[in-house]
Image (cartoon, rainbow, N blue to C red; front, side, top):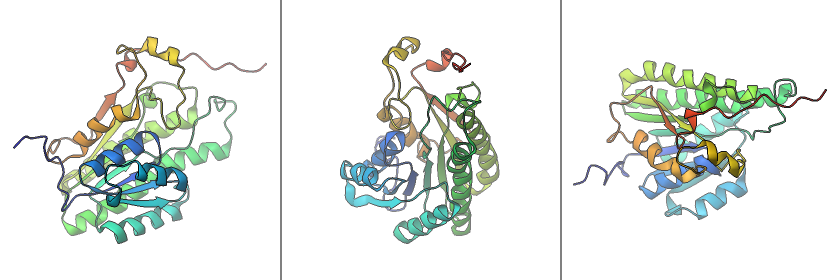
Length: 261
């Protein structure tokens, strides 16, 4: 039997994907469904969740959930809903993130936008991962978590709320990997490049900076995501960051923001 033929066990593997209504989160959630994994599609938009599930290969394996993860109470509600629908969650993907606006540079971003970006990316990610891990540890079951970070964990993006949230998330991945590893729970990061989906609106001219010659699509991330999530394929991998960017990280194309005088 091929090593790649059964990366997951549909009888025991379950998944929770945040930000599953669009972009990379949607592509990963749909790919998990395609492998027979029962998956919670969590998103802030009911319309997006419904559309994502309807477009899945096996919508009967999907569980919709709608709520704003900037609220800690919503995180608890999501955990309760996931447990009720799936039992233990063995695979957790944190892709949810508020939209990014180029206008929100260091001299313009307001407190609400700053707090919301950190709340959804970092606070919700930590709260959900820790709660899921505690249940897996109590049940003596393995797990695999994947956080969507950014090339801008180490490179300025002109969006300090976004870059700092993703930079903190990159360290969170390492902290959780070190703590959870002894319990057979792996934690890794997926680092997207210029992906024309979700909260990123890319100018097509950006392709000239990408060695592979094109902008990425959300579906470009799904195969790597599943490979890293699979305990069969990546069972000895934790605390790692996997860049899927067409080579974009070989350059830095951002200039300082234009400021009004």
